[in-house]
Length: 198
Length: 72
Image 1 (cartoon, chains in turn red, orange):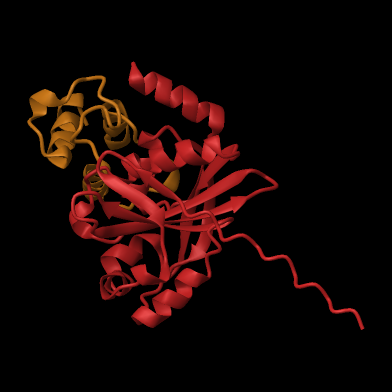
Image 2 (cartoon, one colour):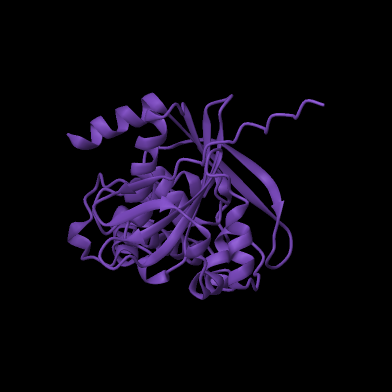
C-alpha cells in the first residue's frame, strides 16, 4: 500500500511589525497575554464604550484567545509604547481577501493614553500598510455613543456611510444601541493624506 | 444660542481660552480638539439640551457652527 504523502505544511503567518513615531505595532503572540490586559477586560470604562460584557479571563484564557487569530485574515495587533515597550492597546482587524476589505476594531486599554491621539497615529500606519497590501476599503462600526471613537474616524477622513438604528442590544442598562458605519477607500485615504500634508 | 455662547461651551470642552476658538473652527482644527475633548463637548451639549443627542445630530457636530446650530 502506497503511503500517503503528508499534507503540505502551511507557511507560518507573516508577523506584522510597524514602527510609528511613538508606537510599535506588531502581531500579538501568546507571550503577550498578561494580567494587565485581563484587567482591561474587567474595566467598564474600557469595555463600556464598545458594549462588551465584562469578563474575568486568566492569562491562560487570553493565550487561547490570541491563538484564535490566524494573523492572515484575522489580525490581532498590539500597540506598544516605543519608549518602554509598554502594551497600551490592541487592534482586531478582519480582512476579506475576496472583497479586499479590512474591518477595524480598536481598544486602548491603558487609560493614561486616552486623548493622546494614539488611534490616529497608529491606525494611519495600519491603513498605509493594508492599502499597500491589497486592501481597497477600510470599514469601522463604532457605537453612536462611543464619542471618542467617532471623533477618531471623522478626524481621519473616514466617511459616514450610514446609521444602523437599534443595531445591538445594550450590555449595560436596557434597550438597544445605534451604530455607525464608516468607510474609507484607498483613494480617499491618499487624498486625505495629501490634503493634510499641505 | 449665540455664536459667542457656543464658543464658550466649546472652549470649556477643549479646555482652552475662548480666544483660541475661531469662527470657522472645525473638528480637529486645533490640537486640543481631540477624542476626549469631543466626548466632553457632546456631553456638555446633552447637559444643555437636557436630552441625549440622537445619532444623526451627534454625527453632524463637526464645527463651532454645528455646535451653535444644535444649541439654537
